[in-house]
Image (cartoon, rainbow, N blue to C red; front, side):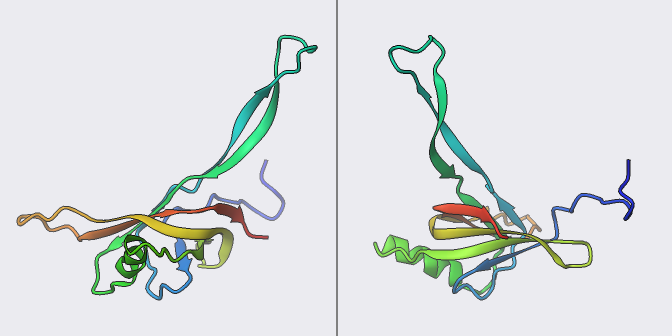
Length: 146
């Protein structure tokens, strides 16, 4: 049954923005790894039945991979360089899902991110594809904004 206000279609996956503290050019073609999991701990006291209780353990967040066409901007590489130099800069950011009318409908905030991997795509003398820059971020927290 459709709500009285009309039909509500799912959001499309191509309508998004990425914001990262200190990164001015953050237009990306794809974002992957928006995931959180909680480890399950089996617990049983000696006097209990043979079926253990299930307790929540550590919360874990997947690495986030961002891809964009390679441009003259070196901001992602310079951020990666801080890690290679042994003084990683941790930054916060957001992945923002937009409606068809480009209004914000969902915001995922990540915290204390730093780049653990940087890569550019394959070079091919006969290719005609856009050269893609990829950066993988370790994050300590991922939450839906209020």
